[in-house]
Image 1 (spheres, one colour):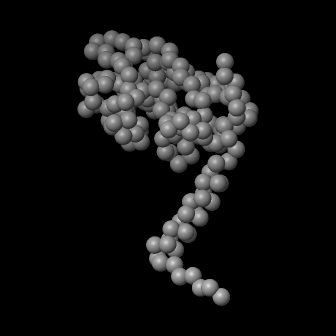
Image 2 (cartoon, rainbow, N blue to C red):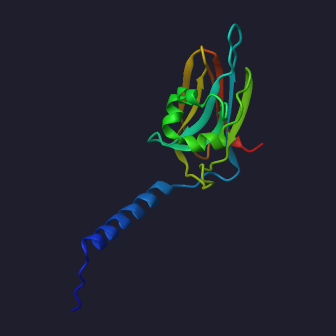
Image 3 (cartoon, rainbow, N blue to C red):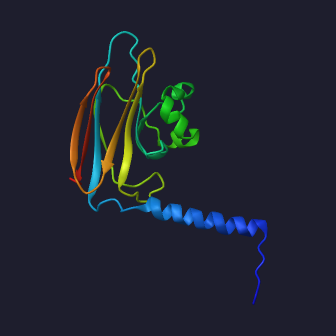
Length: 179
């Protein structure tokens, strides 16, 4: 009979590797349905004295509140970075270099739409399940608003409209076939 001796490092590597593999197998679940996307439309208004275009972040979180995908990021790249932390939740999830890379110019009041194709920020497909869609809004000399809604991604399409009371006026979530 051959006896095997493991070092502590080897033992923990095997145990943690097995646990990690088991966790990944459970986390994978059923893949994102082929040909489906989640369209996120949001509208905001503003104007008046000393109006500055807002910083806006539209993104998706997993059930634990981890950033899965950034859909849109309206910031002033290179200028005004000291106020980027006004997007409180997103600033805590994303790193500064990522924000510099993804950011685009701020936008005037209006309606904007982005789509999520079921991929994370690294381009890997995600599984069906529960996610949070977030639209975060902050404006200099103005309000801070956070829209965060739980959605169930699966085979069944849905459309939900959320009228809001602040400068962020409306968010529409439309999950269905790519169109």
